[in-house]
Image 1 (cartoon, one colour):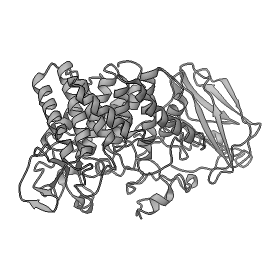
Image 2: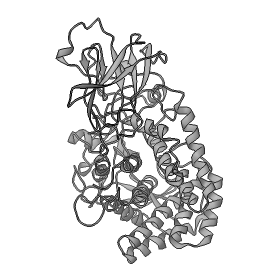
Image 3: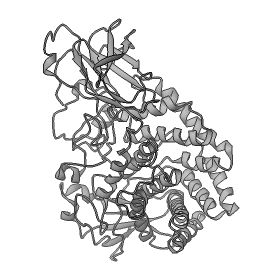
Image 4: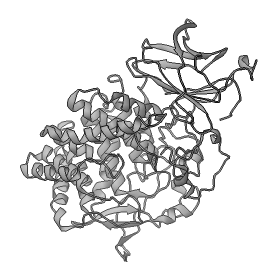
Amino acid sequence: MKSFRVSIILSMVIIFFLPSCTLNLKAEPEIFIRFNQVGYQPNDIKMAVILSNNKLEGKSIYIYNKKRNEKIFEINLGNSLGEYGNFPFTYRVDFSSVKSAGEYYFKFAQQNSYIFRINENIYNGLADSLLQFFRVQRCGYTDPFLHKVCHISDATSIIDGQKVIPKTIDVTGGWHDAGDYVKFLNTTAVATYLLLFSYDFDPVKFGFDSNKNGTPDILEEAKIGLDWMLRSYYAKDKLVTQVQDLRDHDVGWRLPEEDALGFDRPAFVGMGKNLIGIYSATMALASRIWDNKFHFPEFSKKCLTVAENIYSIRNQVQDVDSSGSGMYLDKNYEGKLALGAVELYMTTFKTNYLNDATTLADQAGSDFWWSWGNLNSLAHYRLAKFIPRFADFIVKNLEMFNKKMKQNLFEKGTDLTWGTNVTLLGITLQNILYKKLTNDSKYDSLALSQRDYILGKNPWGISFISGFGKNYTKNFHHQISFLKKKLPGGFSAGPATKNFVDKAKISYDKPDLYLKFQTDNDYYRDDRMDYITNEPTITGNATALFVMGNMVSGNK
């Protein structure tokens, strides 16, 4: 990305330069317009943010219809909203009244922006790409994409607490968690659950079947996770919680089939109420789908039996599992265990599960967040179908996010930390759940603001989803992406505070192309070495898949 000093640098959202705009460079102000690069559905709330070095009060920006080259909307700029980073003047503009399908561009003085689109089908294709990312993450004999079969000896030993057991166990398959080649039960279960939940939530929108084999693509991918989870059931009171240790990060960038540690990958085993919760939830939901959709009673029964067996030992294990190398350790268990209980109730109709779920979900309360470890709203959503008051917990989350959104220029619903983008789309996800329960559009502005931030309405003018928008993340912290020069559906972790990133002491690969737009509170690098702000994960993609898939206009 180059920073040309022209009078307007508009983006959907990238800095651009047109030869016809080279006159009077110093006579016109430099501005940057940030908005959703992918585009909008006709009835969407449509907002843009302007960053400027100059005062723009009283000036106008116009929207033109590309086909007719006709001015259709004028935006008269009012008072500045204050400074942002290096920019002393900022503005927010609303063009929601532009609803007709078509291609448009912004015009300021003599300069035109890139084209943006309005169309009911604008998000068709995004979910497919986000799902394709999972094929890249596949491990073992699972028909992976962009790499060959890998890690066929998982696992070569077992680590149980302080004991190393020289015994092999078959935990091949599944997905690599992120840009490295470690596999985790916690995130695999969360991602698998979200894939299943997406289909269960809307079988039409998530019923796309690109290879025409009669099985929705999303369920084919979920089966990869389910098969690995079944293999991970090591013993009655033990699950394989992680495959490979931190040595994975110290042997250089390589394709998975060329992993020097490919035949030296231990499996950690452990157990906790948190894992029992997400594991039993995933298996119980899978049992229903394989029974109702595929009429496959053998696999359905297998999943349900495992779910009930593992749930039955919940009072005999520690609250939170602590095995592995210190990553993806939950802080509590109530939300996930409540989800397990309510999914078991929905599959078996046994009232003891509903009673457990009610107690646990009340204990969990609102978590005011969304991540692999903060899924309380899923349990509250499921329970609200039977006990409506549980929707109130989701409302409390949305109220807090809404309050936070109104306090910052780019309308983020939360403060920034590691994995911010997942949390932002998690806000949109929770609004989708809330609307399904209530048919209330009260928080649509909040939800769409988070989506738009991900797709370009952010300080850097970048879409965080690979291949979508004019300027998108390209240098993921992801080995296959770096070596193969592409990553379909890659979804970047997103910005954090500069202090948070600085503590990681990252040795960057390239100069900061976005230096002009960095602040202490909002910091992002499109650099392959940045594992804080630029690494994709399976749980991040599963969250994004649910959100973007729900914006699809009918079945494709």
